Amino acid sequence: MAGAPPTENPAPTADVAAELARLYPDAHCELDFDSPLQLLVATVLSAQTTDVRVNQVTPELFERYPSARAMAEADQDDLEAILRPLGFFRSKATALIGLGRALTEQHHGEVPGDLASLVALPGVGRKTANVVLGNAFGVPGITVDTHVGRLARRFGWTANVDPVRVERELGELFPPEDWVVLCHRLIFHGRRICVARRPACGECPLAGICPSAEV
Image (cartoon, rainbow, N blue to C red):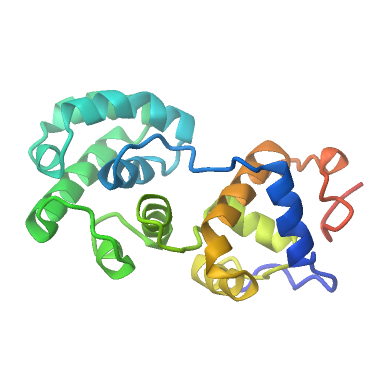
């Protein structure tokens, strides 16, 4: 489904990418993890909450349930108590148990390193799969979360709101080796300056080349 009409003067990709690299040289995944399983679980939990809140509950979660099998066999009430600060804790507890079972039964408890296998897991879509592939396995992928999609439209790189179409169009604009870090930089910028409710265009170093800037 298409979003707003394409801007007549899209932001130059190379210039924007260079400025984002200058602004956020240390951009990275802001979920804390030590393994592909931890990243997969943390990303699933990050839906409808913040990375900060997820990082507050995952130390206890991973200590109590360190493996896919442990999560598959987790006590629902105990899991809900750990996840309560995140909101939607009942459905998230159910999702983690189902995910643990699928990994245990289908992948010997290991997180698969390919897109098709990841998206076949319960509760895992392309966004979550690309987060895991890019950050835990080093496989190029474009993570179209709300920030990436929104900024791509503001820069005029796409007019689509469908994440799969946005993913494809950004993939045509940038080389695969830039995909993962570009998404991190867009997310950093979307959280720190180009926020959804009121973009701080007056403070944004990209305002001079952004077709959506209001200055």
